[in-house]
Image (cartoon, rainbow, N blue to C red; front, side):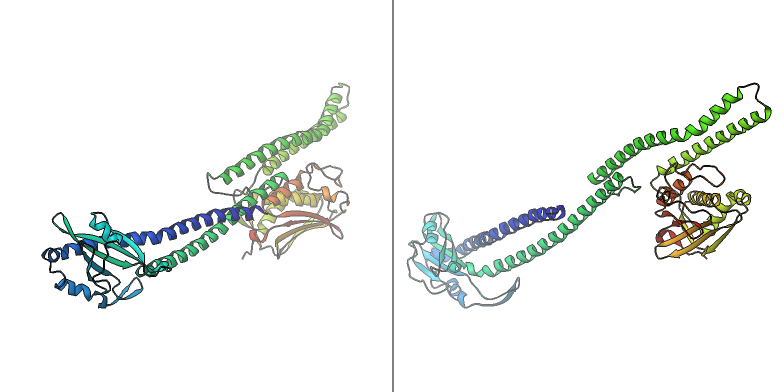
Amino acid sequence: MKLGLRLFLGYFLIVGLTAWLSLKLVLDELKPVVRQVSEENLVELAQTLALVVQPSMQRGDLVGSDIARQLQTLAQTRLDATIWRQHKTRLALRIYITDANGIVLIDSSGEAVGKDFSRWNDVFLTLRGEYGVRSSRLTPDDEQSTVMHVAAPIRDGDKIIGVLTVALPNQSTQPYIDAARATLLRYGVVLLGFSLLIGVGFTSWLIWSLRQVSHYALAVSDNQKLQPPQFARGTELEKLTDALETMRSKLEGKDYVEQYVHTLTHELKSPLAAIQAATELLADAQMPADKRQQFLRSIHEQSERLHQLIQRLLELAKLEQRRALEHRETLPVSVLVEAAIGQLTALLSAKQLHWQLTGAPTLAISGERFLLEQALVNVLDNAIAFADIGSTVCIDAQQTASGLVIDVRNDGPPIPDYALPRLGERFYSLPRPDGRKGSGLGLRFAREVMTLHGGQLTVQNHATGVLVSLRFAAADTFGAD
């Protein structure tokens, strides 16, 4: 079972169980609470009516009094009232009064006058000076037919001379209990539905967040440049991401230093050996002047080579440690190309080369000017170095479905098949036609610039030379007027 499903089921089980237990508790307590409230109201009503009839009981004229006649018409009283969506048409109360021996004197229902109720708990307990209450079924087999009886004593000083009982069928409160149950169940289902939606949303967010962290961890393990996912400050996910970022930085820093020391040591061997050999030969005082000048020029050239190598390494090292662009601006392709060509005019002239910009030069790119210019300079420098004398270096800008593509094409020797996959590796280069060997850092720098801009650099042979393509994502390219 997947983690997301396990989390959702666990969450829903907890919420659902809590909601079910809470709803069951409320529903189970609803009926007793209504009964308790009804009983309390009956107690107050019985006590009040007992005080009302007390003077007539004390005089002994209760049976023929106005109160007796009014109580006997209680069952015929008609109502027209809607209470909490329940329509009520008659009174459900029954009131009967017994004497000190428990004999019924008055009954609003007219059913029990003259009967002995002294053994019923409501009358029996009240005559003993206790709280008299009972609940009896009208139909023995029907639980819903129960009637609550609450009694109050009728006194003459300290002596109990009668009992007044107020009876209310529990069935009269049942519609309200049923309506409340239906409302609670409806809201319970709605609450459960909302809990389900919240659970789905929460689980989806958590799984998405974990996938973001997992994707970032895999990118770190593959040494990919990727911005760490952003989470709310102070959360565990942010702390986990920060820990991964710290681990990545430390591991990359260690590997980076080791790799650089190894490759730099290898690359420095050749110019340092040439400088050392030249200085040893210059120590010979008998060396002719022309030879001395030749070795001095060699020392100067190798020193310049070391300077350029170190400078490029520093620029590349700084670029490789970056994770995002710092200063974005919209730059037309024509402006970038002209700036790059301006730095290479001397090289173009030395090989009698021409250049031309075709396609849609008014297209623009969103990025850092310096990095994009330097990437173009490095690509054009390689194109010029390997171009045939007197040929043309072509730059073509086109908008494609996936984004902007800048192609740099020259006419010259093709790249051997074995070398194509390795172009762009640090310090890997092919001998140039003039015999010089490059550092292999130019294309590496350009590739890093494209990665930082969310694009890619590709190199391939074409019919008469080499084609280098700078491919930018559609989100970073614009049409320019």
